[in-house]
Image (cartoon, rainbow, N blue to C red; front, side, top):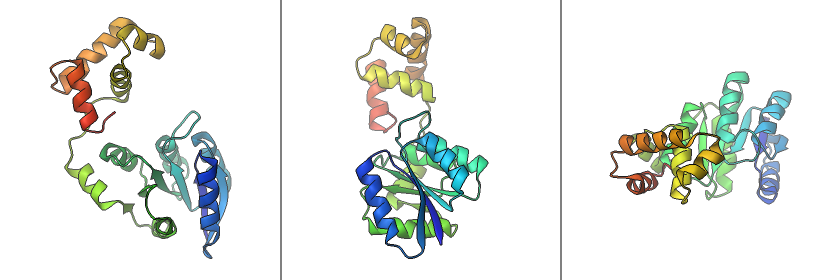
Length: 202
């Protein structure tokens, strides 16, 4: 019997997935949670074979951060990420968090049980087109903080507002923006936003 933990913040989706997996004769959902924090605590409590984690969840940590914690503290639990964000950069982050599977939410529902079985058996399960894009695409040269600053700038926030929201000085934000333009070989801030958006880094 494959013991599964399911972490998804949308109640309707989580309920549907629990019901779907409940029809599988070789699977048991031992815990269902709605945040990254509770995914970690419940996984440590129930010790599932596979944790199915959404990337974007409320709480202190997201699905990828939870996966990294589980890789360190519960290495026997294999992680399968479910996401609506089919971006090469997300897949790279997932692989660095030692995730064993990466599935898009728009995949046919019947594929989820098969993916869980394969991950439980030690295989890697990745969308082939996304894997190819992750291998061949340009890597994001920006740090997580730089991405955060540029994302706010792309939404129209001025340096003073970004500084206030991130508890930084205005000078530090300007330094980040200057570094971002340099790293992306952009002409200016707007060009940096365009480059990062086209590369799916924002």
